[in-house]
Image (cartoon, rainbow, N blue to C red):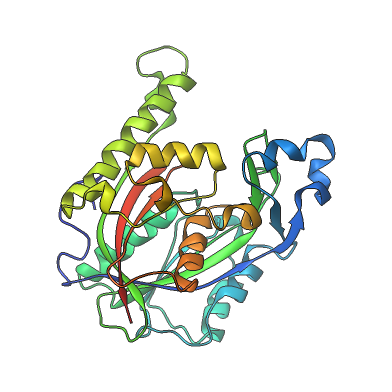
Length: 313
């Protein structure tokens, strides 16, 4: 779908269904037990709502292996959309998929996953399903702390290791699932922040990003005639209380709709935590049939919003 324009997702398939399948996280480690906290102050992160980090030395592929299901609730997917970091793609991955009983015709790797990449996975799968190039799709997203993405980040985030798997299909399914009602994506490029100045301007970039996110959220709600006040749950990445509340205010949804239950003990599961949070909400037994879920993904590059409706089983 082009940058927030065009027809609603699923326009050519009657409906597009999203089925959370499983997530796999590292072991829970208290903040003051993290080696990376030796030169930092855990109280900074406690104030942001964090209590633990999910830590593993397994690597992304092992996390993915743990999250892959023994049995799929959708017809055998002909498409797999990966977002696990290109450095983790290896010959082992197709074999891992085969061992899980998967024989996809196509595998796409979104090489550098960010916190908004899950929306790009949905967008790509939706386009191929709508166009008849795939019957159903399996999306796999994973991230873990490393030298480029440190566990403790400049007084802002506590990063965690984890993976999540979800399915997309236009076919009926016999399990509880979500209907993707609307999705909009767009991108902020670093060059955008220097178009009006000779040097990159961090404040300008932040302003552009806020304006973009407000526009994308309004777009997905407008397409379905959904007032922000009628959104039952707002699910996003665990960026800390202050930033999550700021996005909630930007969206216009009710304060109590913001999903915070996973923040303290999951931390910011790199790239995957919006879908991990949806998995937690889905598995918690608190979703009423017909509930509206607004998902938001914001990152240095990919940004977007998606409106889901819980269709029950």
